[in-house]
Image (cartoon, rainbow, N blue to C red; front, side, top):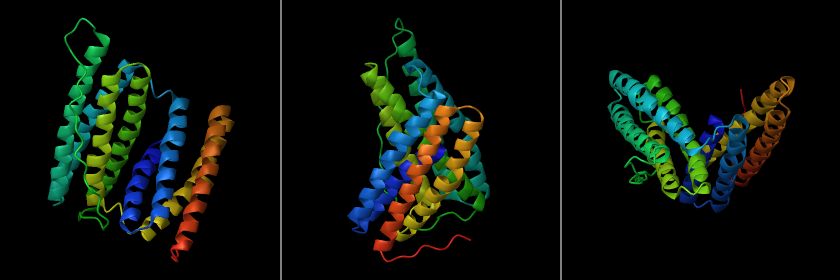
Length: 275
């Protein structure tokens, strides 16, 4: 599921880069595929594991995840970046950790409002994303450890974005408009601020030709190896529904790889042959 969430936010970033290069067809392809990764693949897998609970359970899960990031993960990443001389990354890790602590408090307040009607707690909605433009270019850090940590953090932010999107949809369906706003606005912060800042430092976006080649490699791996293997394991375990979902996803990923390969050909570019 982390892979689907990461693909969604990454493809949206790749689409904007294609826009900047005046490649509307490629941009549209990336946006369609990004939608499939979130609204089909991620959502189907979320249903299989029962990820979306009631609103109170979703808030508890969210608060727990934010607590880990604020008190453990980002503190460790900031300390390591400082030790490795990557001061800008250390600063960003620290700032994002502070944001996550604030998110945790808002989720806890919302949980009190949802579960204890006698309390005076209200569901906060004062979350505002300040979008960061993702610039194409190489990594801006010197340490391989910092780069690895950035990539780990990007996966976490992408997953949080996807999860909060579904949690917000659940809140909307159950008549909790303020809670839906809280989840969706927090999701926007995770994608358009945190992920974007980390993507800039990690050099996650390059020119469109390079982005396409990276995309094809990932989609081909998922379509020919990862998802078929997962489907076989699910079938062997008797999880028929999961096996079908995973097998269908593998077919989708192969179609994606083919579509992106055609886009590369139209650009007159050749991708490196896998070693």
